[in-house]
Amino acid sequence: MSGVRYMKEVGRCGRKTVAGELWPQTGLAYLAAVALKEGCGVRLIDAMASNETVEDLVKIIGGFAPELIIIHTTTPTFQNDACVLAHLKKAHPAVYAFVGTHVSALPEESLRRSDADFVFINEAEATLREVILKWDVGQVGIAGLAIRRDGEILAASECPYISDLDSLPFPARHLLPNEKYHMPFFEGEPFATIIPTRGCPWKCTFCRAGKVWGGRIRARSSENVIAEIVEMKRTLGIRNVVFMTDSLTLDKRWVNRFLDGVLEEGLQFRWICNSRVDAVDLEMLKKMKRAGCLLVSYGLESGNQAILDAAKKRIKLEDSRNAIRLTRKAGLLSMAYFIIGLPGETAETIEESIRFARELEPDYVNFHVATPFPGTELYDIAHKNGWLATDDWNQYEEEGSAVLRTEALTAQDLVSAQRRAMRKFYLRPSRILKELARLRNWGQLKARFRAAAAMAGALRKK
Image (cartoon, rainbow, N blue to C red; front, side):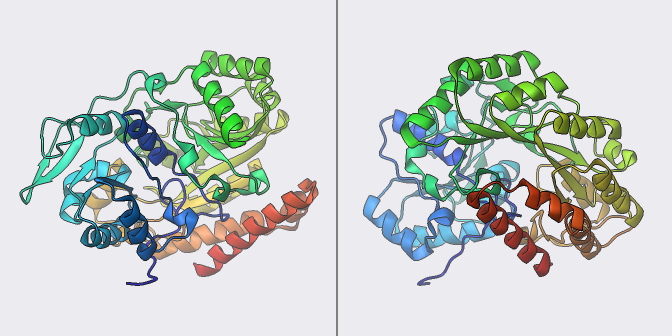
């Protein structure tokens, strides 16, 4: 096994990165912070960022000798992660657990397909605290766990969601290799992800956020979020942030309190966020820019209204037009995300989406192939209709995957269409000239070149 790397290169949602970016393991850093607060010794290893092999992990764990090892996993990495866990368990017989969206959706199956002793279901911080306080994972009374005991798999009830998110300690980022995390928009400088809200009230068929984080939006106070940014800048020197929530702009009162706080503090940092297309206005976007925002990402998903309706997205095409127009008017960059292969997709509707992207002319786009992750309604629909091309979790990637077909198109048709859509949008002289005109310094040039090279490589593989 010497030198073997099981780890797969994935991004924040378990997908291959499009532009070569590397995302921080903020979820694990939250769990590390909880363990530290309870007086535990903690070591946090991001093997992808630090380029460690399984052999390296065996040595690191041997020197630390932990009692509990928690491994974050996603659908496309689960099989690899299960192999890593099995190898580590042979070398070091500690208690092993999985955490992440995949095991939350399929807790019992995840235990059957791995040597894990237990898995966390959904939000894990409060459950981990209970595990530490009781340190008896065989005790069924701990909500939020699925457990293997005496060869039998026992599923506990889900743990109640944390109502007061301000009660959580800030992520233990000092345990992460922060210098390794980069993306093109920050010109090679490290960045951090901050989670200001949890929960999603929408029922989009392709998304599992509501299942994992709950259907009610729970927000941290704006003061708490600002305090995290201040501490991060002071202790780690990180001044670039990606807000990891689709709900940042939903509550206008919250947004204004946050932006006013940033401006009053004179807090100098650069940031990126997501938003629904029906949750922004020009005044808000201008204020976001004054507070350091660089770019807003929107889920447009499709250029066909019937597909949007079937996906329960609850937006109109005009909402998307308006959001991109207002974002441009406010002087902010925009990123538009599309999904190819949702139910009802045909060759004609794919072309509608491509034309829609070119009509709106956002600064950046990304076309994903629809991936029916476990825990989503799309997975249930695809399973019921026989649309799944494979049950190999390794293939469940949004970039270049081929696991789903529609009534009209094969899985490979969708992958080819994704490649065509990206090329039609980006490989135009006007787009290339526009991107070159944005370059202001050597750092931007290097970052954009690295992103372009990564994207070109990805497209060649498909």
